[in-house]
Length: 253
Length: 308
Image (cartoon, rainbow over all chains, first blue to last red; front, side, top):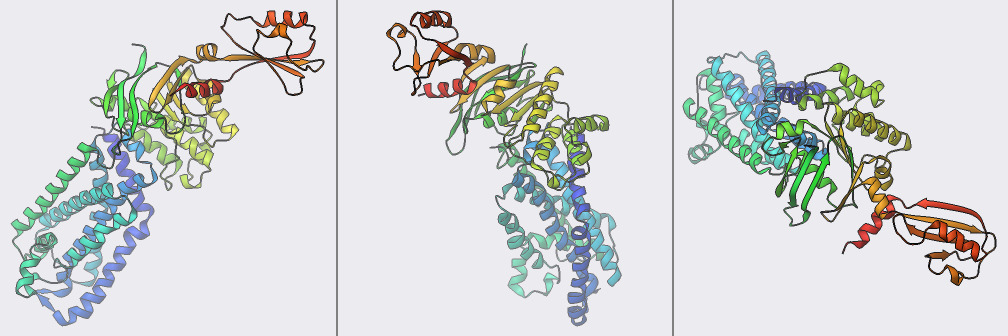
């Protein structure tokens, strides 16, 4: 194991986050605050409670997931796409590093950043609403698992993308809608008949439901299913990455 | 085993069907400076990229110091430093950070003194805290070299090292290459500037359309294929070449004031001495005489012309 290489890549990735501290840290704080003003205060004043939880507090896990998903994907996809774009990827490809090491370093870096981000959002939210975390272990477990899974997903997008447009495509057209429709801001039990069933096809529902359960002990679907779905998605991503590296797809031609 | 890199039967066909390399067999000797010459698109960069692990080969095998680049890629790659043709650096990193990153990537323990020495050797030390994006083109090129040398490679690939580089940097670069060679580093450079190969290389390989058409020691190549020319400046212009001199391959300049004699270094044909005797016999007097060797460039062009 070339641990020095893993560390070198990881450090560069983290350094990038701290170089763009404004974008990495300040912007999620601001957008979270905005969500609280708009959803928490304006809409929340009419909804008041879902499953016995104040609306403001109810949306916190969903908000964290929303940022976690989008940031994990954009961090990881950009991290691998950018060297491909400028050509500096030659160095990575010519270095004595295995694919596993590349993955650990890039996905680890991206996941670390989005976990930090999630915690910053959590801290910001605690200024607005009273929070409780009933299952801290599972909260951290869901946080880490989701960050890793979606960083891996972002990594795949970054390798697949041939242009900046493609890089934005999946997050914009698929992930963001699925997250908004995945129960970030409402309980899927509030949906009318058929839509409730359709929503269950949305994988993000399981992530948010499980994550919310770790906070308040209330979930739309059972926690076991949530965990299972997250692990399935992780497994799918690992399988795709394994295939990419076996074939050299869009990395080594 | 004297060769440090051994390439046998390597082919590369791209997904488009383009055959970039056809059956390349090549051995690079330990400690030599090898120049790979060829026109644009000949396959130079593809060949280097395969040895360095950037491009997958279609068939064949490559070993670096006995390590197979597939099965034993860690050992093989850690011996190699690569300076690619394009200036591709993470623009937002500082010089110091990016060179140390390269060292780490190749699995070497941090060594500030060594990195400092590399930067000083390449006149980059006073720029160590500058971001790559602020460097001039020449400085960026130096930085690429520093990155390649950061992990103490035993083999250094320089892909078109002096393309778009000013004279001073070029001189520095050759001085550096010579120093590295003294330390036992094997250097492989690709170029289409012949004078580079001529000035630096121990051996020259010529590649064209994906095939190695010749590998030869530079001196032998010059001797074998090189021609000499002797130019005589005549005291009085001449209307035509006298009959007595017809057995020499002579050319008369348009104004009749210069005679040029072209001859092979090795040929048994009548030499310079007999020509001068015959010139005297024919009553021709000359004011001055100049001889020159044909350059590698001329050899190169004539080689490519012979290709079907």
